[in-house]
Image (tube, rainbow, N blue to C red; front, top):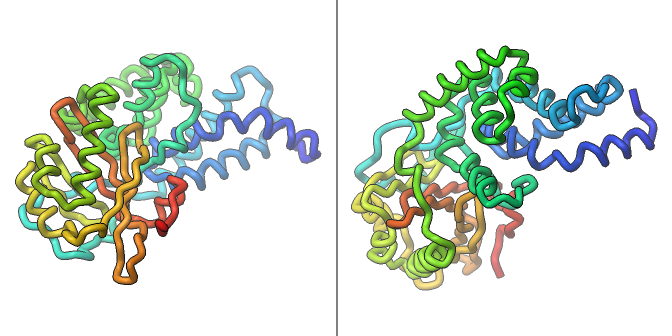
Length: 325
């Protein structure tokens, strides 16, 4: 084993450029940025221990992905499926009381935009990269068996040739293609049609998001609801209830949204290739404290989906403070 300092430096120099894309890959497989980070550490430890055996017949990237895939598949054998509230039951009619959490459920987590790996220069590739991280797709992937997840991610998201995927997974080319067809068919049933949207251009999207933030901070529920599409969805893990339709969301906001001026602050950010906001609430001591990460799906007709993750621990991944000045 290459335990000398020179070997360690060489290993780090050659493998570190792949760390972020491997993190995104593990996140797609597991639906958790916490679990993905732990697995990436394990992947690099395994890679270092077997670095002497790397003979260069495959590219270093392919070799790392083989280790990553095996590590993820092994982890999936011992983990629960990560879900969103919309994957548990039908939408609710009445807003739940505050603090109605379900901590026993293994919830999906958002992926901070800053954690995304190397962004391609090709605009089409950028769009594909963002689409491959959309929350609706990540949630749907969790319902596929591990090997199907890997095939979909490698073929449809990362655009690997079928022959390379077959070699990496120890399958035949025909086996990869049939697995991919089965996975695509199931994803077509799981991913809502509303997620396959055409976003407005950048100026229009910025204006929409700016109006949403201002209305939210002002507790202007009529304006917020006008910015939503008629069939918009709102969910708030770890709250197990979710709401579908503009009227149902308006009732939820009417109960849950504070009307005290200055009690809410939204900080723009990005997650899962989608626009997002970090939400801060002013507590009784007058301090604005971290509350949730809101991830928005936006179409030309308005906001189609808001996923509000109520989890202060997520703020570290977005490099955001827990307290605002």
